[in-house]
Image (spheres, protein in one colour):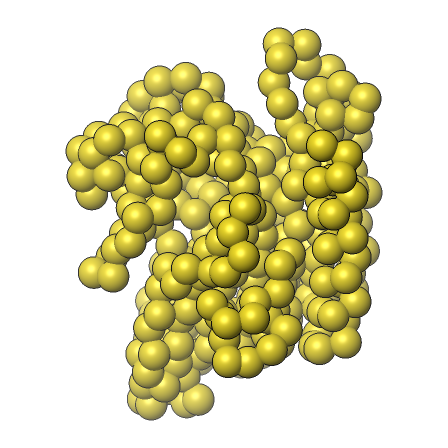
Length: 290
Ligand SMILES: [Ca+2]
């Protein structure tokens, strides 16, 4: 176990060096500061915790941040091992069979025509997606320009990913390009790395935007394509000073609901203006392992 942790730490350090050299990093938060009021970047900021909190296993299962520094030790055997370092961000969905919200909003502090995002996320150890095939949507993330699902013509695009039931307790991604997302027979408690790249239109009326997403499980070396939409309309906000992606949220409403308290862990959140892969062509060839 120690070897694995060491390897992850070295990979995280190496990636940070690569990332700084290759573009503007808007934020890279592994939650090790245990303080979301000061992620350490000029413009980026986290919104208030909304059923989210920073947790650690050092030296025992403890909540250390929930809108302020706290110390709540939990002794019921929960494993909050982080992916990198000792801290991660927990999304706590209480048992609510008809749907519940746990969401972390953020502000990029600027308007970006093209952005990359990536993060590690652990499938809950008791995950079960209620409902039949393609029923009950869960949110994974959204980013937007001048307003979340506002008038796209004036406020620009809202881009994200949702996933729905596969009919067997697992999940598939939502959309005409749906792909398998979580298999409960193999993926509970497993960490995945999720990478997003969105570029808006060069100008409104020209449909040359793109929306790309990749996913890799922790024991895999290459990424699977989750979404690949080229030459689509990604509208630019018409509000002065807001012509680009400005804010977003992680997770959100899980309308499938859960029969048991269900916790996701998220770690190593990165937003950048340049590619998060260290070489082109894009994956699955030669991806960076974060
Ligand atoms: Ca961490």
